[in-house]
Each structure stands twice: as C-alpha cells, then as structure tokens.
Image (cartoon, rainbow, N blue to C red; front, side, top):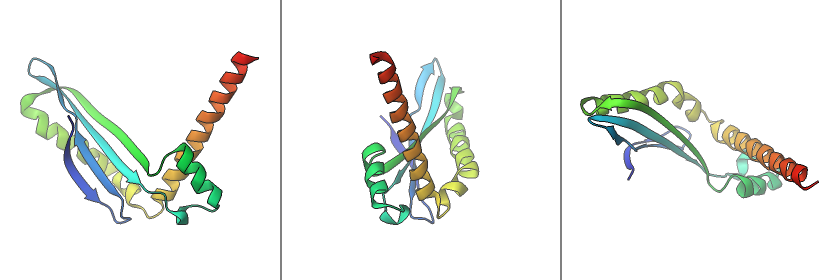
Length: 132
C-alpha cells in the first residue's frame, strides 16, 4: 500500500505528490521506490482548437496524469529515510523547475497527445499489416 510522503503546490497551481512504495527485498535490504504523480487538468486555454481538447480528453484522459517512479535497490533498513529524501531531492533539483514553469501544462498535454497519436497510428499499421 502506497503512502503519501510529500505534496507540493507549484507556482502554476499544479500539485506534485510523492508516494512511498518501498518494500522488503531480502534480509535487511529494501527496494526504496518513490512514485511521483502530477495531475494536469485540461484547461481550454491550453488549446488552439476546441477539437484538440476533445482529442486529448479521448486519447490521454481528463485529467492527464504524469507518473514517474524512481528507485534504488539494496538499501539497508537504516538508510531508507536518507535514500528516500535523496530520490525526492534529485527530482526537485532536476525536474521541478520544468514542472513549475507557466507553460508546462500545455507542453505536457501536447507531448502526451503526440505520443497517443503515434501509439494509435503504430497500432493501426500493425493491425493492417497482419490483416492484409
């Protein structure tokens, strides 16, 4: 069962949450695993065309979700808290400035839309290949 470690409200009103998924690996060693989640709501201001928001809603979801897992294996029980803070600290140092930018929600949604379109097109090409 995951537990919420930390929650941060960013300048652009997005909320980043950190969840602990740490589990016993072997003996006194653990897999320290932190899931990072950010919900990105679909706001009409992010889109040039009304059809885009509907396509994002259909292909990506409403709201869109950013999920990333960071982990470290073989951590002794005495170092779990330290490693957890290091994993969170690395994300905060390297990624949080990008997430905090005012343009991040739109960029994220457009990137996810492009990925979903590519996945859909690839799936259609594979299906057509095997049914020809």
